[in-house]
Length: 154
Figure 1 (cartoon, rainbow, N blue to C red):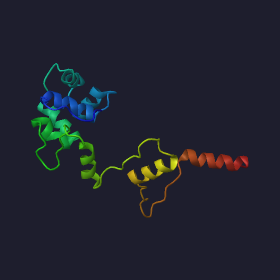
Figure 2 (cartoon, rainbow, N blue to C red):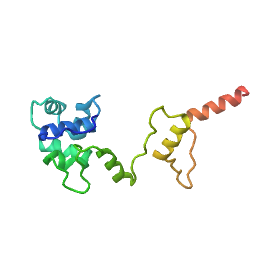
Figure 3 (spheres, one colour):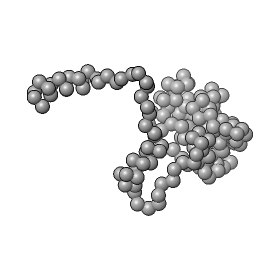
Figure 4 (cartoon, rainbow, N blue to C red):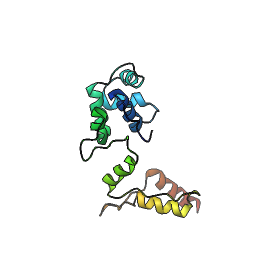
């Protein structure tokens, strides 16, 4: 996945950039085929510049990454929710629009300690609260392990 899109790309190159941004390289074409119904071979042809993207392909990428739709088609971010990835800081802008705050900044230099990583993860992924009135049942395997330990006298 790339960071900043080069400026001056044509529609096909912008589509390829969005594909790189939206889908990892592993099973890229099969994944896109499964989502869109468009054959993996056609996605591969576009990616390898053997054909132009179809409207259906652009529509599927717009469903996957709607913030790039106007840029993908016109080369400009035309709406308030549209992002132009040719500008530095576009990821931070997107994060702020989605989460309402800028992304947390990592301290420069040394890798994070376990405590710092735990604090950062709790900010990024706050613990969810269980639904009221529902208790989690242990899995069958967990129940069997408990019964086995009790029978073995542990």
